[in-house]
Image (cartoon, rainbow, N blue to C red; front, side, top):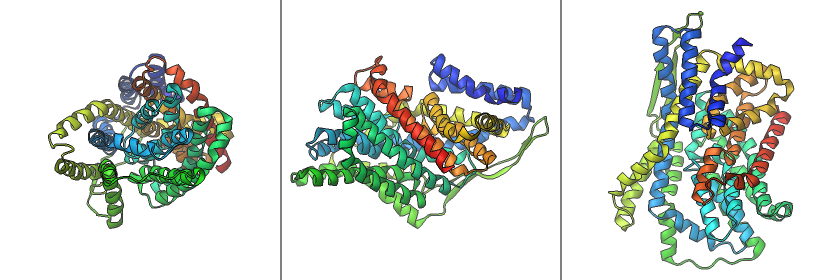
Length: 502
Protein backbone atom coordinates (compact mmCIF):
# COMPACT_ATOMS: atom_id res chain seq x y z
CA UNK A 1 0.00 0.00 0.00
CA UNK A 2 2.87 2.39 0.80
CA UNK A 3 4.31 1.69 -2.64
CA UNK A 4 0.93 2.53 -4.22
CA UNK A 5 0.64 5.80 -2.28
CA UNK A 6 4.13 6.86 -3.34
CA UNK A 7 3.42 5.98 -6.98
CA UNK A 8 0.04 7.72 -7.02
CA UNK A 9 1.16 10.89 -5.20
CA UNK A 10 2.14 12.99 -8.28
CA UNK A 11 -1.14 12.20 -10.05
CA UNK A 12 -3.20 12.80 -6.91
CA UNK A 13 -1.51 16.17 -6.41
CA UNK A 14 -2.31 17.03 -10.02
CA UNK A 15 -5.97 16.13 -9.42
CA UNK A 16 -6.24 18.18 -6.23
CA UNK A 17 -4.51 21.27 -7.62
CA UNK A 18 -6.56 21.23 -10.82
CA UNK A 19 -10.01 20.22 -9.65
CA UNK A 20 -10.21 21.37 -6.04
CA UNK A 21 -7.76 24.25 -5.88
CA UNK A 22 -8.58 25.17 -9.52
CA UNK A 23 -5.02 26.11 -10.38
CA UNK A 24 -4.00 26.68 -14.01
CA UNK A 25 -2.60 23.55 -15.66
CA UNK A 26 0.89 25.10 -15.81
CA UNK A 27 1.06 25.67 -12.04
CA UNK A 28 -0.58 22.34 -11.20
CA UNK A 29 1.89 20.52 -13.44
CA UNK A 30 4.79 22.32 -11.76
CA UNK A 31 3.64 21.19 -8.31
CA UNK A 32 3.13 17.60 -9.51
CA UNK A 33 6.64 17.68 -10.99
CA UNK A 34 8.02 18.98 -7.69
CA UNK A 35 6.37 16.09 -5.81
CA UNK A 36 7.70 13.52 -8.29
CA UNK A 37 11.19 15.04 -8.08
CA UNK A 38 11.11 15.06 -4.26
CA UNK A 39 10.20 11.35 -4.22
CA UNK A 40 12.87 10.68 -6.83
CA UNK A 41 15.57 12.33 -4.69
CA UNK A 42 14.49 11.25 -1.21
CA UNK A 43 13.11 7.75 -1.77
CA UNK A 44 14.70 6.37 -4.93
CA UNK A 45 17.98 8.35 -4.51
CA UNK A 46 19.55 8.31 -7.96
CA UNK A 47 23.25 8.91 -8.46
CA UNK A 48 24.11 12.55 -9.16
CA UNK A 49 24.06 12.27 -12.94
CA UNK A 50 20.72 10.42 -12.76
CA UNK A 51 18.78 13.62 -12.02
CA UNK A 52 20.23 15.37 -15.05
CA UNK A 53 19.56 12.34 -17.25
CA UNK A 54 15.93 12.08 -16.10
CA UNK A 55 15.33 15.76 -16.88
CA UNK A 56 17.14 15.40 -20.21
CA UNK A 57 14.81 12.54 -21.17
CA UNK A 58 11.74 14.58 -20.30
CA UNK A 59 12.98 17.53 -22.35
CA UNK A 60 13.86 15.24 -25.27
CA UNK A 61 10.33 13.83 -25.30
CA UNK A 62 8.95 17.38 -25.21
CA UNK A 63 10.68 18.48 -28.40
CA UNK A 64 8.51 16.69 -30.94
CA UNK A 65 5.14 17.28 -29.30
CA UNK A 66 5.93 20.88 -28.38
CA UNK A 67 7.07 21.82 -31.88
CA UNK A 68 3.95 20.27 -33.39
CA UNK A 69 1.79 22.39 -31.07
CA UNK A 70 3.69 25.54 -32.08
CA UNK A 71 3.48 24.71 -35.78
CA UNK A 72 -0.22 23.92 -35.68
CA UNK A 73 -0.99 27.27 -34.08
CA UNK A 74 1.27 29.14 -36.50
CA UNK A 75 -0.59 27.63 -39.45
CA UNK A 76 -3.94 28.50 -37.91
CA UNK A 77 -2.91 32.13 -37.44
CA UNK A 78 -1.72 32.33 -41.05
CA UNK A 79 -5.09 31.17 -42.41
CA UNK A 80 -6.99 33.37 -39.97
CA UNK A 81 -5.05 36.51 -40.87
CA UNK A 82 -5.48 35.76 -44.59
CA UNK A 83 -9.27 35.65 -44.08
CA UNK A 84 -9.43 31.98 -44.98
CA UNK A 85 -11.93 30.98 -42.31
CA UNK A 86 -14.43 33.66 -43.33
CA UNK A 87 -14.21 32.51 -46.93
CA UNK A 88 -14.74 28.87 -45.94
CA UNK A 89 -17.69 29.87 -43.74
CA UNK A 90 -19.41 31.76 -46.55
CA UNK A 91 -18.81 28.89 -48.96
CA UNK A 92 -20.32 26.29 -46.62
CA UNK A 93 -23.34 28.43 -45.77
CA UNK A 94 -24.33 28.61 -49.44
CA UNK A 95 -24.32 24.84 -49.78
CA UNK A 96 -26.94 23.99 -47.11
CA UNK A 97 -30.49 25.35 -46.89
CA UNK A 98 -31.58 22.83 -44.22
CA UNK A 99 -30.57 24.38 -40.89
CA UNK A 100 -30.31 21.03 -39.13
CA UNK A 101 -28.04 19.61 -41.84
CA UNK A 102 -25.87 22.74 -41.68
CA UNK A 103 -25.69 22.48 -37.88
CA UNK A 104 -24.59 18.84 -38.06
CA UNK A 105 -22.11 19.44 -40.85
CA UNK A 106 -20.40 22.40 -39.16
CA UNK A 107 -20.21 20.74 -35.73
CA UNK A 108 -19.25 17.24 -36.83
CA UNK A 109 -17.19 17.34 -40.03
CA UNK A 110 -16.10 20.96 -40.44
CA UNK A 111 -14.67 21.01 -36.90
CA UNK A 112 -12.80 17.75 -37.63
CA UNK A 113 -11.41 19.39 -40.77
CA UNK A 114 -10.11 22.27 -38.62
CA UNK A 115 -8.93 20.00 -35.80
CA UNK A 116 -6.65 18.22 -38.23
CA UNK A 117 -4.43 21.30 -38.26
CA UNK A 118 -5.07 23.38 -35.13
CA UNK A 119 -6.38 22.25 -31.77
CA UNK A 120 -6.63 23.93 -28.37
CA UNK A 121 -10.38 24.38 -28.70
CA UNK A 122 -10.09 26.67 -31.74
CA UNK A 123 -12.23 24.45 -34.04
CA UNK A 124 -15.04 24.60 -31.48
CA UNK A 125 -14.63 28.37 -31.12
CA UNK A 126 -14.82 28.89 -34.89
CA UNK A 127 -17.78 26.54 -35.36
CA UNK A 128 -19.76 27.96 -32.42
CA UNK A 129 -19.16 31.51 -33.65
CA UNK A 130 -20.36 30.64 -37.17
CA UNK A 131 -23.50 28.98 -35.81
CA UNK A 132 -24.39 31.77 -33.40
CA UNK A 133 -23.92 34.40 -36.12
CA UNK A 134 -26.29 32.29 -38.22
CA UNK A 135 -29.01 32.50 -35.56
CA UNK A 136 -28.63 29.20 -33.67
CA UNK A 137 -29.06 28.86 -29.90
CA UNK A 138 -25.88 29.96 -28.11
CA UNK A 139 -25.60 27.19 -25.50
CA UNK A 140 -26.52 24.42 -27.93
CA UNK A 141 -24.08 25.75 -30.52
CA UNK A 142 -21.21 25.83 -28.03
CA UNK A 143 -21.99 22.36 -26.63
CA UNK A 144 -22.42 20.77 -30.06
CA UNK A 145 -19.25 22.36 -31.42
CA UNK A 146 -17.29 21.08 -28.43
CA UNK A 147 -18.71 17.57 -28.77
CA UNK A 148 -18.40 17.55 -32.56
CA UNK A 149 -14.70 18.35 -32.67
CA UNK A 150 -13.82 16.07 -29.76
CA UNK A 151 -13.78 12.75 -31.65
CA UNK A 152 -11.11 14.16 -33.99
CA UNK A 153 -8.77 15.46 -31.27
CA UNK A 154 -6.80 12.20 -31.15
CA UNK A 155 -6.12 12.45 -34.88
CA UNK A 156 -5.74 16.22 -35.12
CA UNK A 157 -3.16 18.94 -34.55
CA UNK A 158 -0.83 17.25 -37.03
CA UNK A 159 -0.88 14.05 -34.93
CA UNK A 160 0.43 15.55 -31.66
CA UNK A 161 -1.71 13.23 -29.51
CA UNK A 162 -0.54 10.21 -31.47
CA UNK A 163 3.09 11.22 -31.07
CA UNK A 164 2.34 11.81 -27.39
CA UNK A 165 1.32 8.20 -26.75
CA UNK A 166 4.11 6.86 -28.97
CA UNK A 167 6.89 8.45 -26.92
CA UNK A 168 5.71 6.96 -23.59
CA UNK A 169 4.95 3.43 -24.80
CA UNK A 170 6.92 0.63 -26.43
CA UNK A 171 4.06 -0.70 -28.55
CA UNK A 172 4.65 -0.25 -32.31
CA UNK A 173 2.93 2.90 -33.55
CA UNK A 174 1.35 1.06 -36.48
CA UNK A 175 -0.48 -1.31 -34.14
CA UNK A 176 -1.76 1.55 -31.98
CA UNK A 177 -2.93 3.51 -35.03
CA UNK A 178 -4.91 0.62 -36.50
CA UNK A 179 -6.61 0.06 -33.13
CA UNK A 180 -7.24 3.80 -32.78
CA UNK A 181 -9.03 3.84 -36.13
CA UNK A 182 -11.49 1.23 -34.83
CA UNK A 183 -12.18 2.98 -31.53
CA UNK A 184 -12.16 6.31 -33.31
CA UNK A 185 -14.94 5.12 -35.60
CA UNK A 186 -17.14 4.39 -32.57
CA UNK A 187 -16.30 7.74 -30.97
CA UNK A 188 -17.03 9.50 -34.24
CA UNK A 189 -20.51 8.01 -34.56
CA UNK A 190 -21.32 8.60 -30.88
CA UNK A 191 -20.39 12.28 -31.20
CA UNK A 192 -22.44 12.67 -34.39
CA UNK A 193 -25.50 11.19 -32.71
CA UNK A 194 -24.86 13.40 -29.68
CA UNK A 195 -24.93 16.52 -31.86
CA UNK A 196 -28.28 15.45 -33.32
CA UNK A 197 -29.59 14.94 -29.77
CA UNK A 198 -28.37 18.38 -28.68
CA UNK A 199 -30.11 19.97 -31.66
CA UNK A 200 -33.55 18.54 -30.99
CA UNK A 201 -33.69 15.34 -28.94
CA UNK A 202 -34.04 11.68 -29.92
CA UNK A 203 -36.19 12.32 -32.98
CA UNK A 204 -33.35 14.27 -34.56
CA UNK A 205 -31.01 11.31 -34.08
CA UNK A 206 -33.32 9.36 -36.38
CA UNK A 207 -33.65 12.32 -38.71
CA UNK A 208 -29.90 12.70 -38.88
CA UNK A 209 -29.12 9.07 -39.76
CA UNK A 210 -29.43 9.75 -43.49
CA UNK A 211 -26.53 12.19 -43.15
CA UNK A 212 -24.65 10.42 -40.37
CA UNK A 213 -24.34 6.93 -41.84
CA UNK A 214 -22.80 7.80 -45.25
CA UNK A 215 -20.32 10.25 -43.71
CA UNK A 216 -19.49 7.82 -40.89
CA UNK A 217 -18.73 5.03 -43.37
CA UNK A 218 -16.45 7.14 -45.57
CA UNK A 219 -14.66 8.71 -42.58
CA UNK A 220 -14.16 5.28 -40.99
CA UNK A 221 -12.64 3.99 -44.23
CA UNK A 222 -10.37 7.04 -44.35
CA UNK A 223 -9.22 6.47 -40.77
CA UNK A 224 -8.53 2.79 -41.43
CA UNK A 225 -6.56 3.33 -44.64
CA UNK A 226 -4.48 6.22 -43.35
CA UNK A 227 -3.83 4.44 -40.05
CA UNK A 228 -2.59 1.38 -41.93
CA UNK A 229 -0.07 3.52 -43.82
CA UNK A 230 0.81 5.51 -40.66
CA UNK A 231 0.06 8.89 -42.26
CA UNK A 232 -0.06 10.52 -38.85
CA UNK A 233 0.24 14.18 -39.78
CA UNK A 234 -2.79 14.33 -42.09
CA UNK A 235 -5.02 11.53 -40.79
CA UNK A 236 -7.38 13.90 -38.96
CA UNK A 237 -7.45 16.62 -41.59
CA UNK A 238 -8.10 14.28 -44.52
CA UNK A 239 -10.75 12.30 -42.60
CA UNK A 240 -12.58 15.50 -41.72
CA UNK A 241 -12.37 16.66 -45.33
CA UNK A 242 -13.74 13.30 -46.55
CA UNK A 243 -16.67 13.65 -44.14
CA UNK A 244 -17.28 17.22 -45.25
CA UNK A 245 -17.44 16.24 -48.91
CA UNK A 246 -19.62 13.21 -48.16
CA UNK A 247 -22.13 15.34 -46.27
CA UNK A 248 -22.29 17.84 -49.13
CA UNK A 249 -22.94 15.10 -51.67
CA UNK A 250 -25.45 13.34 -49.40
CA UNK A 251 -27.33 16.56 -48.74
CA UNK A 252 -27.58 17.28 -52.44
CA UNK A 253 -28.92 13.77 -53.16
CA UNK A 254 -31.35 13.67 -50.23
CA UNK A 255 -32.69 17.21 -50.55
CA UNK A 256 -32.45 17.65 -54.30
CA UNK A 257 -30.82 21.00 -53.59
CA UNK A 258 -28.83 22.33 -56.53
CA UNK A 259 -25.75 24.31 -55.72
CA UNK A 260 -25.49 27.72 -57.32
CA UNK A 261 -22.74 28.48 -59.76
CA UNK A 262 -19.70 30.07 -58.12
CA UNK A 263 -17.88 32.78 -60.01
CA UNK A 264 -14.17 32.59 -60.77
CA UNK A 265 -13.49 35.25 -58.14
CA UNK A 266 -15.34 33.23 -55.47
CA UNK A 267 -13.49 30.04 -56.37
CA UNK A 268 -10.22 31.96 -56.34
CA UNK A 269 -10.99 33.25 -52.84
CA UNK A 270 -11.80 29.71 -51.70
CA UNK A 271 -8.51 28.45 -53.14
CA UNK A 272 -6.66 31.25 -51.35
CA UNK A 273 -8.32 30.25 -48.08
CA UNK A 274 -7.51 26.55 -48.24
CA UNK A 275 -4.09 26.84 -49.93
CA UNK A 276 -2.05 26.20 -46.74
CA UNK A 277 -4.08 23.06 -46.00
CA UNK A 278 -3.65 21.82 -49.56
CA UNK A 279 0.11 22.33 -49.30
CA UNK A 280 0.25 20.40 -46.02
CA UNK A 281 -1.61 17.47 -47.58
CA UNK A 282 0.50 17.45 -50.75
CA UNK A 283 3.80 17.63 -48.87
CA UNK A 284 2.77 15.09 -46.23
CA UNK A 285 1.77 12.58 -48.91
CA UNK A 286 4.78 13.44 -51.08
CA UNK A 287 7.31 13.04 -48.27
CA UNK A 288 5.56 9.84 -47.20
CA UNK A 289 6.12 8.40 -50.68
CA UNK A 290 9.68 9.73 -51.08
CA UNK A 291 10.54 8.87 -47.47
CA UNK A 292 13.62 11.09 -47.07
CA UNK A 293 16.11 9.56 -44.65
CA UNK A 294 17.41 12.65 -42.85
CA UNK A 295 16.82 11.88 -39.18
CA UNK A 296 17.72 13.32 -35.81
CA UNK A 297 18.16 10.88 -32.95
CA UNK A 298 18.78 11.58 -29.28
CA UNK A 299 20.58 8.94 -27.21
CA UNK A 300 20.50 8.95 -23.41
CA UNK A 301 22.92 7.24 -21.00
CA UNK A 302 21.87 4.97 -18.17
CA UNK A 303 22.16 5.51 -14.43
CA UNK A 304 21.70 3.69 -11.12
CA UNK A 305 19.59 4.34 -8.02
CA UNK A 306 20.50 3.70 -4.37
CA UNK A 307 18.12 0.75 -4.12
CA UNK A 308 20.07 -0.99 -6.87
CA UNK A 309 17.66 -0.34 -9.72
CA UNK A 310 19.46 0.33 -12.97
CA UNK A 311 17.88 2.53 -15.64
CA UNK A 312 19.35 1.27 -18.91
CA UNK A 313 20.91 3.53 -21.51
CA UNK A 314 18.75 4.00 -24.61
CA UNK A 315 19.88 4.59 -28.16
CA UNK A 316 17.48 6.54 -30.37
CA UNK A 317 15.44 7.51 -27.31
CA UNK A 318 13.74 10.14 -29.47
CA UNK A 319 13.96 9.97 -33.27
CA UNK A 320 12.58 12.49 -35.75
CA UNK A 321 12.59 12.43 -39.52
CA UNK A 322 13.52 16.06 -40.09
CA UNK A 323 11.88 16.35 -43.51
CA UNK A 324 8.68 14.44 -42.73
CA UNK A 325 8.35 16.06 -39.29
CA UNK A 326 5.09 18.08 -39.07
CA UNK A 327 6.84 21.23 -37.87
CA UNK A 328 9.13 21.19 -40.91
CA UNK A 329 6.17 20.72 -43.26
CA UNK A 330 4.35 23.61 -41.59
CA UNK A 331 7.35 25.95 -41.86
CA UNK A 332 7.66 25.20 -45.58
CA UNK A 333 3.90 25.70 -45.96
CA UNK A 334 3.98 29.05 -44.18
CA UNK A 335 6.86 30.27 -46.36
CA UNK A 336 5.20 29.25 -49.65
CA UNK A 337 1.74 30.50 -48.60
CA UNK A 338 3.01 33.81 -47.30
CA UNK A 339 4.96 34.37 -50.53
CA UNK A 340 1.80 33.65 -52.51
CA UNK A 341 -0.33 35.94 -50.30
CA UNK A 342 2.27 38.69 -50.62
CA UNK A 343 2.17 38.48 -54.42
CA UNK A 344 -1.65 38.47 -54.36
CA UNK A 345 -1.72 41.47 -52.03
CA UNK A 346 -3.54 39.53 -49.29
CA UNK A 347 -0.79 39.65 -46.66
CA UNK A 348 2.63 41.21 -46.38
CA UNK A 349 5.77 39.54 -45.11
CA UNK A 350 5.75 41.95 -42.18
CA UNK A 351 2.71 40.14 -40.75
CA UNK A 352 5.00 37.25 -39.81
CA UNK A 353 5.94 39.09 -36.61
CA UNK A 354 2.26 39.37 -35.64
CA UNK A 355 1.70 35.69 -36.47
CA UNK A 356 4.65 34.66 -34.32
CA UNK A 357 3.44 36.84 -31.43
CA UNK A 358 -0.06 35.38 -31.52
CA UNK A 359 1.36 31.87 -31.71
CA UNK A 360 3.67 32.42 -28.75
CA UNK A 361 0.91 33.93 -26.64
CA UNK A 362 -1.44 31.02 -27.34
CA UNK A 363 0.91 28.06 -26.90
CA UNK A 364 3.48 29.16 -24.31
CA UNK A 365 1.51 27.79 -21.35
CA UNK A 366 0.66 24.64 -23.28
CA UNK A 367 4.32 23.96 -24.04
CA UNK A 368 5.39 24.64 -20.44
CA UNK A 369 2.70 22.23 -19.22
CA UNK A 370 3.83 19.59 -21.73
CA UNK A 371 7.45 19.85 -20.57
CA UNK A 372 6.52 19.57 -16.89
CA UNK A 373 4.18 16.64 -17.46
CA UNK A 374 6.70 14.79 -19.62
CA UNK A 375 9.44 15.26 -17.04
CA UNK A 376 7.04 14.02 -14.34
CA UNK A 377 6.00 11.06 -16.47
CA UNK A 378 9.60 10.12 -17.22
CA UNK A 379 10.53 10.16 -13.52
CA UNK A 380 7.53 7.95 -12.78
CA UNK A 381 8.54 5.56 -15.56
CA UNK A 382 12.20 5.39 -14.51
CA UNK A 383 11.18 4.66 -10.90
CA UNK A 384 8.61 2.02 -11.98
CA UNK A 385 5.82 4.11 -10.41
CA UNK A 386 3.72 3.59 -13.55
CA UNK A 387 4.17 -0.18 -13.38
CA UNK A 388 3.25 -0.18 -9.68
CA UNK A 389 0.11 1.88 -10.33
CA UNK A 390 -1.02 -0.32 -13.19
CA UNK A 391 -0.50 -3.47 -11.11
CA UNK A 392 -2.61 -2.12 -8.25
CA UNK A 393 -5.37 -0.81 -10.52
CA UNK A 394 -5.58 -4.07 -12.48
CA UNK A 395 -5.73 -6.05 -9.24
CA UNK A 396 -8.43 -3.78 -7.79
CA UNK A 397 -10.70 -3.69 -10.85
CA UNK A 398 -10.08 -7.18 -12.23
CA UNK A 399 -12.17 -7.95 -15.29
CA UNK A 400 -13.64 -4.43 -15.22
CA UNK A 401 -10.29 -2.80 -16.01
CA UNK A 402 -10.88 -2.62 -19.80
CA UNK A 403 -13.92 -0.43 -19.04
CA UNK A 404 -11.95 1.57 -16.49
CA UNK A 405 -9.27 2.16 -19.13
CA UNK A 406 -11.73 4.43 -20.95
CA UNK A 407 -12.63 6.17 -17.69
CA UNK A 408 -8.94 6.68 -16.90
CA UNK A 409 -8.25 8.18 -20.33
CA UNK A 410 -11.24 10.49 -19.95
CA UNK A 411 -10.10 11.53 -16.48
CA UNK A 412 -6.67 12.39 -17.84
CA UNK A 413 -8.11 14.86 -20.34
CA UNK A 414 -10.52 16.33 -17.82
CA UNK A 415 -7.79 17.06 -15.29
CA UNK A 416 -5.04 18.17 -17.70
CA UNK A 417 -7.18 19.79 -20.41
CA UNK A 418 -5.47 17.90 -23.24
CA UNK A 419 -5.72 14.58 -25.07
CA UNK A 420 -1.94 14.71 -25.58
CA UNK A 421 -1.33 15.30 -21.87
CA UNK A 422 -3.65 12.43 -20.94
CA UNK A 423 -1.79 10.10 -23.30
CA UNK A 424 1.53 11.19 -21.84
CA UNK A 425 0.26 10.81 -18.29
CA UNK A 426 -1.48 7.44 -18.61
CA UNK A 427 -0.21 5.90 -21.87
CA UNK A 428 2.54 3.88 -20.21
CA UNK A 429 0.21 2.84 -17.39
CA UNK A 430 -2.36 1.53 -19.89
CA UNK A 431 0.32 -0.38 -21.77
CA UNK A 432 1.65 -1.98 -18.59
CA UNK A 433 -1.86 -2.85 -17.42
CA UNK A 434 -2.54 -4.62 -20.72
CA UNK A 435 0.72 -6.57 -20.44
CA UNK A 436 -0.14 -7.56 -16.85
CA UNK A 437 -3.54 -8.83 -18.04
CA UNK A 438 -2.06 -10.60 -21.06
CA UNK A 439 -4.10 -8.62 -23.58
CA UNK A 440 -3.24 -6.38 -26.52
CA UNK A 441 -1.41 -3.18 -25.41
CA UNK A 442 -2.39 -1.56 -28.72
CA UNK A 443 -6.10 -1.92 -27.98
CA UNK A 444 -5.72 -0.57 -24.45
CA UNK A 445 -3.66 2.40 -25.65
CA UNK A 446 -6.19 3.09 -28.40
CA UNK A 447 -9.09 3.06 -25.94
CA UNK A 448 -7.09 5.41 -23.72
CA UNK A 449 -6.50 7.90 -26.50
CA UNK A 450 -10.00 7.95 -28.02
CA UNK A 451 -11.75 8.18 -24.63
CA UNK A 452 -9.36 11.00 -23.74
CA UNK A 453 -10.18 12.61 -27.07
CA UNK A 454 -13.95 12.53 -26.64
CA UNK A 455 -13.65 14.04 -23.17
CA UNK A 456 -12.22 17.15 -24.79
CA UNK A 457 -15.86 18.15 -25.13
CA UNK A 458 -16.14 18.75 -21.39
CA UNK A 459 -12.60 19.74 -20.46
CA UNK A 460 -12.87 22.77 -18.14
CA UNK A 461 -10.16 24.76 -19.92
CA UNK A 462 -11.58 24.19 -23.42
CA UNK A 463 -15.13 24.84 -22.27
CA UNK A 464 -14.01 28.09 -20.66
CA UNK A 465 -12.32 29.22 -23.88
CA UNK A 466 -15.43 28.49 -25.94
CA UNK A 467 -17.83 30.01 -23.39
CA UNK A 468 -15.77 33.21 -23.29
CA UNK A 469 -15.78 33.45 -27.10
CA UNK A 470 -19.58 33.16 -27.34
CA UNK A 471 -20.49 35.43 -24.42
CA UNK A 472 -21.18 32.71 -21.83
CA UNK A 473 -18.21 33.36 -19.57
CA UNK A 474 -19.17 32.31 -16.04
CA UNK A 475 -22.15 30.37 -17.43
CA UNK A 476 -20.35 27.18 -18.40
CA UNK A 477 -23.15 25.25 -16.70
CA UNK A 478 -25.41 26.22 -19.62
CA UNK A 479 -23.01 24.38 -21.94
CA UNK A 480 -22.49 21.36 -19.66
CA UNK A 481 -26.27 20.94 -19.54
CA UNK A 482 -26.08 19.77 -23.15
CA UNK A 483 -22.55 18.35 -23.43
CA UNK A 484 -21.93 16.39 -20.21
CA UNK A 485 -24.45 13.56 -20.63
CA UNK A 486 -23.69 12.95 -24.31
CA UNK A 487 -19.95 12.96 -23.66
CA UNK A 488 -20.19 10.47 -20.78
CA UNK A 489 -22.37 8.21 -22.93
CA UNK A 490 -19.66 8.21 -25.62
CA UNK A 491 -16.98 7.30 -23.05
CA UNK A 492 -19.18 4.49 -21.72
CA UNK A 493 -19.64 3.14 -25.26
CA UNK A 494 -15.87 3.07 -25.72
CA UNK A 495 -15.40 1.29 -22.39
CA UNK A 496 -17.96 -1.35 -23.32
CA UNK A 497 -16.32 -1.81 -26.72
CA UNK A 498 -12.95 -2.28 -25.00
CA UNK A 499 -14.37 -4.97 -22.72
CA UNK A 500 -15.82 -6.81 -25.71
CA UNK A 501 -12.64 -6.61 -27.82
CA UNK A 502 -10.29 -7.44 -24.95
